[in-house]
Amino acid sequence: MSKLDPNHLQLTNSGQLKHFLTIEGLSQSLLTEILDTAESFISVGDRAVKTVPLLRGKTIMNLFFEASTRTRTTFEIAAKRLSADVTNFSASSSSVSKGEGLKDTVQNIHAMKMDCVVMRHPIPGSCHQLTHYVDA
Image (cartoon, rainbow, N blue to C red; front, side, top):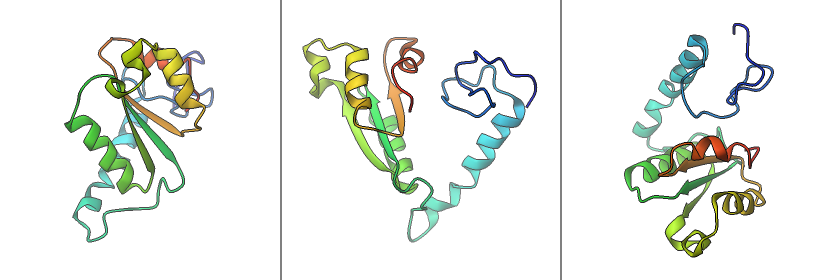
């Protein structure tokens, strides 16, 4: 990887992907690696047993602050096919509906020790904001 900006939000100081919020600023080689890795899992859906142990023992939290069927379901199925434990969060059935803010909601969920967060939020910049509240 070429010279890295140490303050780049998505990368660690060693150039490893920490958050995947946008392709902007990511090197062609890293993007190619992501796409090649994704391509290697395409055939999993065609197998009799549709799982691989890649994320066994990892917990993925799908945080959805707006209604979504296809996106939430797609991420849930993908995580389960990689053998992750998945929890789906819906803002409409949580304390968010009583006025709890993003920071408090996310920090409460983060205390549950999840390994990865997938978030869909109607307010632009919310995913970037999330990175300040969790290490996942």
